[in-house]
Image (cartoon, rainbow, N blue to C red):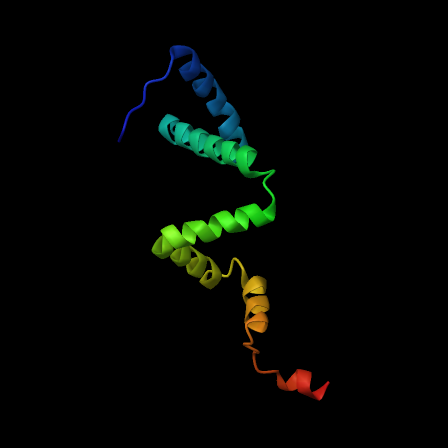
Amino acid sequence: MPEINISEKLYARVEAFQEVVEAVLEEKISFDDCVELILGQGINSMLADLLGSVDPATLLSSFQQLGSQYPTQVYGYVSETLRGGAAAQERERLKRQLGFHPPADADNEAG
C-alpha cells in the first residue's frame, strides 16, 4: 500500500476524527480505512466546490469533450450507468426522444 507523509498535527486530527466517522457509520473501522474515507470525501467535496456553480451547458460541453478524448472510458461509463438502472427514467425518455417507442401494454390499449 502506498504511504503518504503528513504532519503530526494533521495525523492527530485525523486520529481524533475517526471517532466521528465511526459514530456516523455506527461501526469500528481501521485507521487506514478512515483516512481513505476522509480523503475520498475531501476530493468529492473539493470537486463539488469547483464544479457546483458551473452552468449545466458548460458541464455538458465538458462531458462531450471528455467523450471525444476518452471515448472508451466515457461512453463505457455512460452505458454501464444506464444498464445499471441508475437512470431508468432517463433511458425511457431517451428511447422516446430517439424514436424508440416501447410496445404499449394490453392494459394501456384497452383503457
